[in-house]
Image (cartoon, rainbow, N blue to C red; front, side):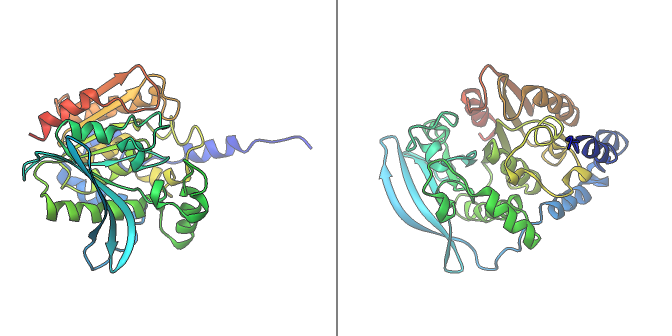
Length: 330
């Protein structure tokens, strides 16, 4: 029997959808007072965050190590007496009480250890957490649920394996999303940061899969003052609807609400820095350029949005981004 591809059917369905919060919508409704609450509420509903507990999260110290110019502390984040996920904090040796803080999310893979340098075979994170603390920032790195030290037992036997597909499938069946669970995780960590450090000089960073979390969390939570993204900038058509990505990227009904670039409307006017590799095969540069044009339209040419093209692929560079953090979190 001949094969008949379902692709034309899927394309027809997609053509029949017009995102509610599209570029034309914002041209006709320029004032955030007319759409901000509705847009943010719609995103919250789409991500289907699980309910948050009533007991504040706590940190239980597991290990502390002096690294010369900085200290590395590893914790278990607990809530209601249960361990939730690992979390690492890197602190400069001479950090002041009001030291700037960066909440940093890794991409898929070994997680925190790829940011600190302990996973030596890692080739795309380039130990960026270590670079940030050496530049003078306090760096808070929760292990994203499903990555590194927050994987299911069956996945821990394979280095670099993640638990996203299993977790996302189960959560979808329960009426939640894995991205929503991670957003709840991010908010719990923000509560801890606010209590411990304050949020006056709080930045966020996200790479690849952690870019989705950082992007959405910053859009939904105004406590974050500035956001840097690497390996995550595109449109749906040029990324997750074009090539197969991890299941945690697929949010039911999100395309009916907005495309990826329009989420930046909920971040503006806070500073946003995006670096994109010209050879990126995960979030291709063509999609990054398309998103850049629409984000620029949102920011209206203001200097608080920076787009940095890079010669590499799907990896963190971060050198100019670190200088930018120093400027916007001063």
